[in-house]
Length: 457
DNA sequence: AACAACGCCAACCGCGGGAGA
DNA sequence: CTCTCCCGCGGTTGGCGTTGT
Image 1 (cartoon, chains in turn brown, blue, red):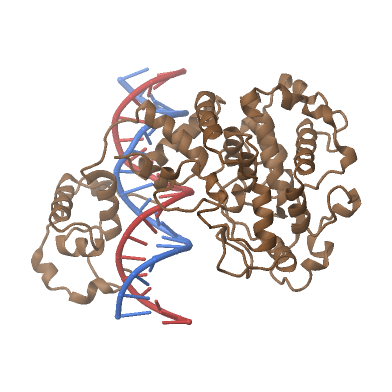
Image 2: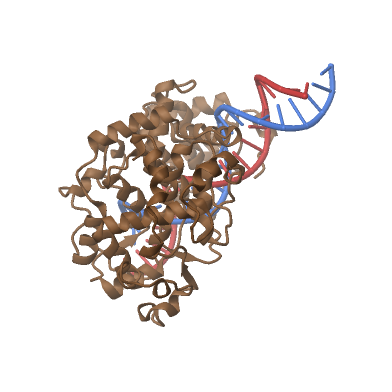
């Protein structure tokens, strides 16, 4: 993109009303791409242009931005006018740097919403989504550079305490299993599902309904277990806003469930049948995985990355990433994930030493993996509903009955008849992480967990 | 003083959803 | 139902000011 710097120095375009009058009145209904018109200007707005736009909007209000362009004679497309008004000319805008309170709120909101800038802006009067987005990107870079956690501990603690008070007594896995298996409406606002919305006001922008994108499942699950804020935080960190075709679970549900639920753009829907691959929206991703072509390594790297500066984040991050991995089908060569932060590879030897405790028999050789696997197993064992759900989705024998061989399938299309030839859109898929065999579980891996501050447990 | 690196931020782009013809 | 148009969102770019060397 090349911005014409010289344009900012140009004179304010002449607002020739005669020129406007000569135009076809229907021109506004023709696609701008096909509409022959004046060469529209790009680049910074001049004070004169601002004045014209401001005067027009104050007089006529905000209706059709393309008409604004037409009526004022501004050589700006309607889109540009809207942006200029929304980000700079609106009278209710608050100028200046963010206050500490606003910064804390942004951090907190981001941990809950991900990169939903417009929704976050709705919580910050006078602030625009663009401002918040810029702030966050700057903050993210700064944190990356300085190897500091992007979510400060004090704010996490505060949010965690709030979550303790706000979270409902609700088992996500139970709810999800029930809904998927029995066709209950996930969008029933009167259901306990609404308990996930720990701050309804935060969702006033759009959702009366919770953000139930598939990527939220791990966080929702952890929250349901009162694991608290950090798990959400790390879940948001280890997952990337992305789109993933999801024919596998689609097939699984079509084969196993009644199909009354669907994921639309990653969200549950009770009204549409499942057809075709799912488009999964993942929450924002601050710390990326290592190999964009190999999702199966992702959880480990994410966990290690989360470990880079705040050991307290490690366990929950590992668990969250593992949880997601375990529940997901891994597209080979998805390329959806970014390169890791340098910090992801810079786990200190001291921390590695600490983490290696109890992981000597880790099947994958990674201390992180050991804890991930055992923690995951522990959760699954503790929660029969989740266990059943995962096993149902993967069309595998129940966890505690399946042998590792039965569970390990690298090519999903051949692993189960459920995912057979009726899925023409299914590329090669594999389970990124396999449910560990019960015999592989090690209680000593939880020594890290118990060593964590209580707020993270 | 000159240059490079960095940070901030305004503005652009593409995309998707909703509304209406 | 399809098409067109508009709006809004999120991601990205690049200019410019500031800071560091």
